[in-house]
Length: 267
Image (cartoon, rainbow, N blue to C red):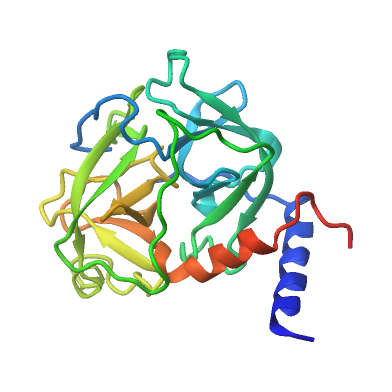
């Protein structure tokens, strides 16, 4: 049995389980940012409960594919995805309402450690690309971003964690990459950062992703290098935001999208 066939069998078993068993939503982790011109960040999507509120972000990585955090998994019948969104409370005529066909959290996702916190969503129908909706580019496998490089994270999350103030319009903030050594130091996360994570923010705090931004994109050099995953509060000094390191999963993402069938398998 060749390697590709083995991989296919593994994915089919995971998908079969995924069609029946779903995790609970967890609180996610823009503080100190600004409102960009409407529809200039065209790859971001809003993930919201059907008939309810936005709770996570995501990135369109193919016309049929959304990349988000595994902890945003509440079951495919519980949410919808909106591309071309800017103001959550207004219909702007640019929105595309999309629905999931399959949810594929990474098979090694660990809710206790937040490791491997990513999920692919296959859509029932393709997004239509144009002036308001586009695809973001993925990084190469094992590519790295140097310490200090300024990236951008975007979302509709809290702008004030203490007062639980969420934004109704898309916001974005520019933050630098923090080295794993510094992020893992005794005055910061003290060893909890793994090779599957990356950190971005300021030592003084004040700029960060927050609750409601989970699953959203951290984009560097035009590529989505990070997925908003977790942190300590929001914008707190010495505790930058922690992101899933997408470059560590490029091969898994490519293989998953290539292998998946259009429907849940019967095994």
